[in-house]
Length: 296
Ligand SMILES: [Zn+2]
Image 1: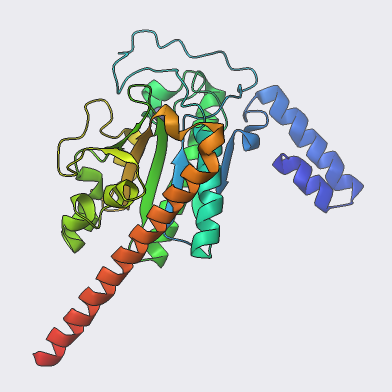
Image 2: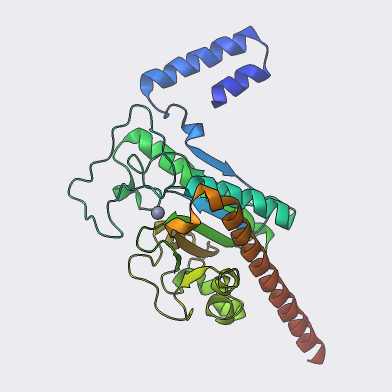
């Protein structure tokens, strides 16, 4: 439902309805807002220290926007791409649902429903969009992620952004992308490499659930082409206003409808366990600091 319709529903007043109609017509004429853009990105601002992002799973068009052509753009791994990550829209929603159940709270999420042909949320704007209406949707996605990251920073000691993707190189593999640890700088500095590449890392907790992860050993180099894109680099903890961010590139075996519920449960369990371990480490650190203060 559009904002204008929501306002109209809330107020029974004819004058307001007339005003809303004028606004809607104005929007149609000016094209200032993408039609139905509220349905093209689904998001929730939650209270848990997690943001789930899934920018490439959508299959919808943006009304009135032609497919991107990418003229003059590089088509390499970080360049112009239009292939969607099938199954990730639905999987991300299910992960968010299971996280809510498992952690007894509300995770934040930002999930695209629009096809990558029209907008690529995991690229900087100059590569991501070729039409003003697509830019509106692009900004909607990034505003939602930025809001979630800011809220987590205000409320929690630690926060994690998981950016969910799909890859076609290896059906049984899940690749970690953190720009080789850059987007996890904050956590590594605060709690040590153990939480990035050791037994307390997210990869270790996924492997424990029989996922085939890469890199393995976890301190190996990340696979070229899957080292993490614009989203983890824009919101990662190497930035003063970011949180720890991991891109996960899932093979086809993790994105099939038949296994969705199990995969989402395993991912949600691993994320919840990871956050719990970091929380314990942070408590321990606070206790030690207090003890040190008492000694001095
Ligand atoms: Zn992707």
